[in-house]
Amino acid sequence: MINILYIIYLLYMSSNYIQTKLDDSNFPIIKITLGTTIKDEDDFNNITNFWLKQYLHKKFFYIVFDTSNIKKLPLTYLYKLGKFVGNLKKIKIQYLKTSIILIKSNFVRKLYSLYLKIQGPLSKIYIVKEENDIYIITSKLLKNENILGYTEYNP
Image 1 (cartoon, rainbow, N blue to C red):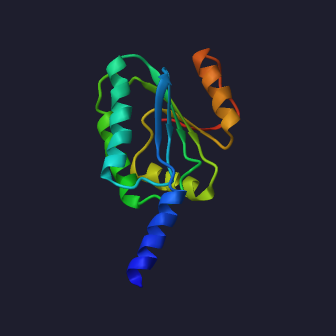
Image 2 (tube, rainbow, N blue to C red):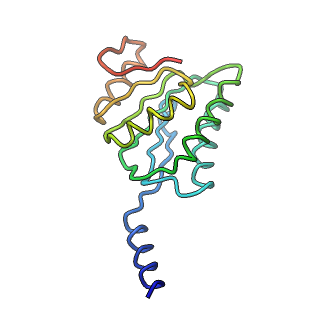
């Protein structure tokens, strides 16, 4: 009986699981669309390796993090992300200029608040609630225009 319930649970989880998407096709705008969760160490490493790969261009870039799909996130990955960003801060030339984080849920907003207690931001960060705001901000960033009216965190 337990095996059947476990199989049903796995089928349910896999049908609701959304995988993380990593997109650098519009460089210097990089997009990381987080999935339902970070399921394991490989999933986390794919994200951080993708992020590190952007530094190989040796050109300034911007990252958009879309957290809309997150349903759960093990706190160990917040700690690992903090350590990862701490190591990025040691890089002599910081090519990441700005991050834009799409946060729709209170759950993710609380996680991000906890994360900021672990590690301060690497670059300027804008927090947005709507996808349209991403396009407004990225357009202004690419044109070197002032960005007003959004929650901003500075390193």
